[in-house]
Amino acid sequence: MNEIANHLSEIRREIGDQVMLVAVSKNQPVGAILEAYQWGQRIFGENKVQEILAKKPWLPTDIQWHVIGHLQTNKVKYIAPFITMIQSVDSLRLLSEVSLQAQKNDRVIDCLLQIFIASEETKFGLDKQEVRELLTAIAQNPMPGVRITGLMGMASFTDDMDQVRREFRGLTSLAAELKTEFFRNDPFFRELSFGMSGDYGIAVEEGSTIVRIGTKIFGIR
Ligand SMILES: *Cc1c(COP(=O)(O)O)cnc(C)c1O
Image 1: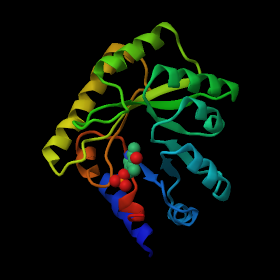
Image 2: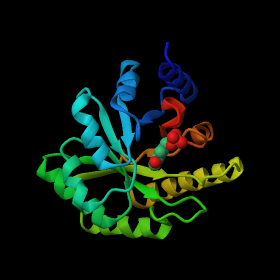
Image 3: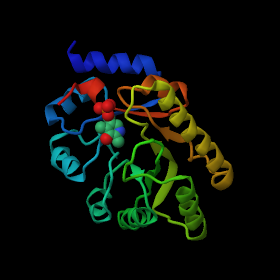
């Protein structure tokens, strides 16, 4: 077996079959993605629209693509025909553009709301108040082209695993609060996307349903 196959089977063993594995293929060539595909991986995550569009024509059509990085409103139209999930929704404006473009394609696109949970300054992600404002706005003005299926977050870049665990716990409890406040009768709001190469073990312990793993599968590039 080759290395990618070994890494994939090790990760799958560790996370179990209830957790979705998104193979993060950013900066990876088509050949590496194909290798993972040959070992059964079907879900791939990229953080740039251009990169998805460049690779997609060379790859099998049953690959499910997830956007995991900051998405500009003016790029949504390029991915709306095929994208499986947008994990990094961080504004109402972006969400309404996704809904519009999805409707143009007769689709409903699954979206996660990206929540800011880390301690360091980053530009992207909603805080607890902003996510409630966004969900209140949607409750008043529904968006038929999107289905909000959960939350996504990225822990701090730190060796302090207690801190990482606390941040994951914060996201899990926020999701539970939002479920009762906004999604009480909605069975689709159930996904929690957190956990990367360095912290997916903790993530699964803390209730993650989707892990996004790049380096541990493909190596550093
Ligand atoms: C790159 C990236 C990952 C994967 O990180 P690794 O440490 O390589 O596993 C996960 N999520 C997002 C948003 C990323 O940009």
